[in-house]
Length: 188
Image (spheres, rainbow, N blue to C red):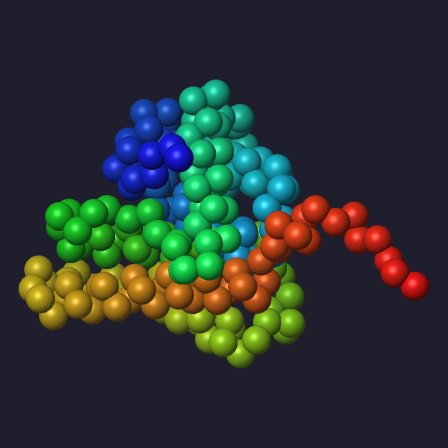
């Protein structure tokens, strides 16, 4: 299995190619699109990213490869039965405010990606609607955090909540691989 992509390497590579968003926001967008119901085999996600993070310009081959690897890693994690989704955030050694900012970027990306693929919130469960309202609150957080144990614990709990909420959205609205494989034959 190929090495898991991490926040720093993805963010650095995006920056090197003139893309102004960090790895957390891109990962959030991919998760949002998938959790909002985009098919796992839909190749339009790259075009959607190009529109939102690269002024509609195509990506270089290296950037396309990086984003495709991240997309595949994300799909794989969402399909794992053991809540294997790892948010693409700075590691625990990074300053707490850097991690907090990256979480906000991830949630903002998720909301954007989710909105691209799920306009009908009426069909969503109350749990999904509540999670999205909470995501909107998280996306607006601006308060700097203290580098203390209490703040660390709070950030950890918010990250876990975001992860579980994203998985909830995917399990309710996401497409399974089986859905993708069928040309929906009807049985009469």
